[in-house]
Amino acid sequence: MKKSVLNRKVFAWALYDWANSAFTLIVITGFFPIFFRQYWAVGETSTSITFYLGLVNAAASLIIALLAPFLGTVADLGNLKKRFLGLFAFLGVLMTLSLFWVTSGQWQLALMLYLFGTFGFMGANVFYDAMLVDVSDRKHLDQVSAWGYALGYIGSALLFSFCVWMTLSPDTFGLKSNTEAVRYSFLLVAIWWSIFSLPLFFFVKEAGGVVEKSGLIKKSWRQLIGTLKHIRQHKPVIIFLLAYWLYIDGVDSIVRMAVDYGQSLGFDSSSLIKALLLTQFIAFPAAVLFGYLGASIGTRKALLLGIGVYMLVTIWAATIDETWEFYVLAVAIGLVQGGVQALSRSLYAQLIPKEQAAEFFGFYNMLGKSAAVLGPMMIGGVTLVTGSHRIAMLTLLILFIAGAALLIKVPLGSRE
Image 1 (cartoon, helix red, strand yellow):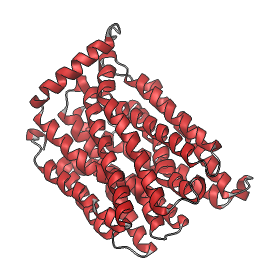
Image 2 (tube, helix red, strand yellow; image 1 turned 60 degrees about the vertical axis):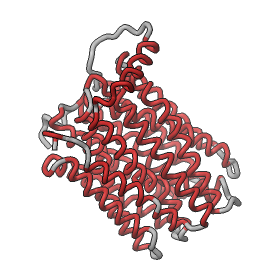
Image 3 (spheres, one colour; image 1 turned 135 degrees about the horizontal axis):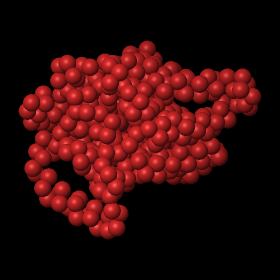
Image 4 (spheres, rainbow, N blue to C red; image 1 turned 45 degrees about the vertical axis):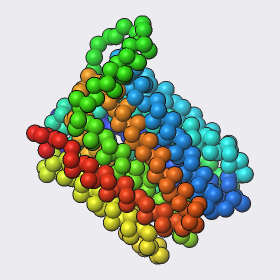
């Protein structure tokens, strides 16, 4: 990448992805579902555990979905994106840190801390995503967005590798058991998230000057209502958001429920952890390459390619019986996961007014996270009713197919 694209400001912004992606991989995707099933909720039935995990993920997503557009409007009018990002990130860090002290059998407390930690993580991302337009011009949005996800994948993979080593060999680190090692992993995530967030706050400035803060809440409500009334003028934005609402639900559901799904099929925890690491290390270069692919063949075409791979992954996942098949799926997901996420963010940034970035990214995250209400609930609910994790997995096909169909209809004009 040219130096003019990956400058200090862009790197500082992208480094926040390095910081908070550790929460996604180690807490949401990796250790929390395993630890919840084997330690905090020991004695509960498998289907109940899947339902609990789906429910709490849905609840966190729903809360942030309802708040995101209004908070985004306040952030735009008051130039408060960095402050709000800091507040939500602090909440996420604090809740993650608190998981260290939760003992066996306290599954209700673990779920509550996880709920608010996920809420903080997702809330901070509303403003982090919105700051993409503060660090990149429109020409380089695909590449800059992709670099954020790429650093997130490699950073989280490095910390995750260390945490896995610590859990597999606790004696090496002076720990009594792998249970203690997992608890210290939550502590390390909180520290990692805190330290690597700092460059963004030091080196990235929000676009815009000083804004009068008096009457900010009232002004924000008026602008939000006005935007809702006139949003018909932004037809490409509306269609894209509906498409995104559907297909990103499938992506997020796979991220959040993959480990629990693997466990329900009888795969051992160490194999699942290795598969997660494989996904992360592949996703690092793949996300960067997808940024260039989007710039080369068109962002939409590259997105559709990634969604197509997810469809194939979903079908195969419902039939797998062997551990090696899970590894192959991990490779396939790693090749497209970062690309789908990064190009979705950059395409949306191309469609919206720059001066209302946080507000419009509020809608983006609202629909994205409210979609994450649907996916986990579908998986948890269908599993509970049918008793089949495989049938529940196949329901995600609906989301990918409908999302791709709508994405094709987004009017891009000269942007394609």
